[in-house]
Length: 302
Image 1 (tube, rainbow, N blue to C red):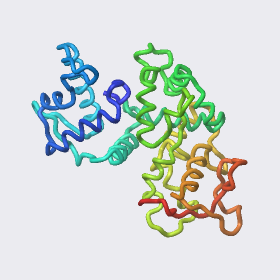
Image 2 (image 1 turned 90 degrees about the vertical axis):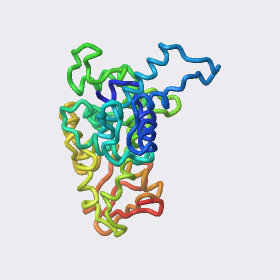
Image 3 (image 1 turned 60 degrees about the vertical axis):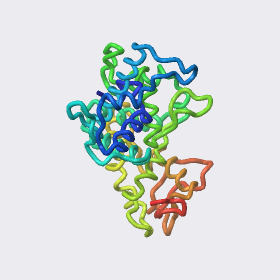
């Protein structure tokens, strides 16, 4: 079951189920899990739920389990749900697990759609800017992503992406630290991988020593396949007929690095000949348009 095929199985619900199983020592009876996660009274008026209400809520818990199973967090063992790994104890740990899982999926996997859709947003922003994505209606955004992912001529239910799946996708992207889906007065989605990059900073900067810019940029394609040089980003550029960045970083990655520097997570600088530095996507409002080295900033917690 895809993370997008069950709109109710959002990050918070998955975390609640995983937290329950973890608190009970790594396994829970299915009936007990449904009782724990489906209260028998409405919070507003304390009236008991009908049998149909209870049945529907129990079914939603089952759907959340299926998503947790696809994420390699839980498995079924007869009448119990059991952990299949060391379960995350915080939202941050869950986000790290989910990101690593999605990053390692083959392109044809059902859940690969999540990061493929994100890579399209990065490629689209390269030409049109992120403001264009923020202002898009849900129907337009879902339509364009579906067209980029293929099967746009399929029925609405058979599409790998549609308006029904869009809200769940936006929730997961926000949870993973890849963007914002709740900006006031907006309808679309703002890609911003700065939080995810901060979480993975240890991969990019293994020690507190200063790192030259080229060495810092090199592992980005593997750690974040939807960003510059990554396999998903290259695929998105081909699909959208967008020329990949030449001689500079993409608009989305450039904005993320500037944000991390502004928040003192990174410290970027320029030494010597500017021709040897890495160029960022031009921003007339920023004083940082290239850098030759980077190091962890004072606000970094890794």
